[in-house]
Image (cartoon, rainbow, N blue to C red; front, side, top):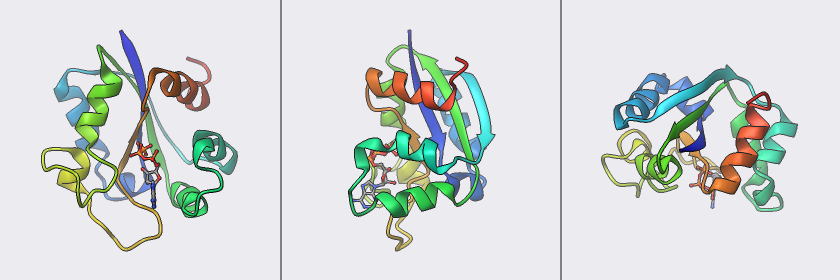
Length: 138
Ligand code: ATP
């Protein structure tokens, strides 16, 4: 069985959508095996988003992720990496399909960084790396 890292980003926590996101994860049949509310620091975010360093949205992205608490979860189930990305919908919440987290709950707020409520690991390698960053004890 597989694991993925799910983040409810600061926009989702501020909008009090944590329960709604976790409800969808659980209703789909996945299991939450670790869960924490915490404020990230710059070092963690620089590692988490290492692939985006140097891109124009990198600094706004880090500032956004520092703007409030994040809910981090490790979620388990068969093909959960693909399954959570399907639940989340595409990156741009305006274009994301209705029925998805981003499509149902997200929109464009005119900010430099896309505020799209959630993060999910995009591959087994990313999941292992990201779970190690956010939950080093696991
Ligand atoms: P996530 O990794 O958060 O699940 P994703 O895989 O859909 O989202 P990535 O390409 O990894 O998106 O980008 C990480 C995050 O950076 C996005 O979720 C979004 O918040 C922001 N982002 C990505 N591309 C852009 C862009 N062109 N302009 C502004 N913000 C962006």
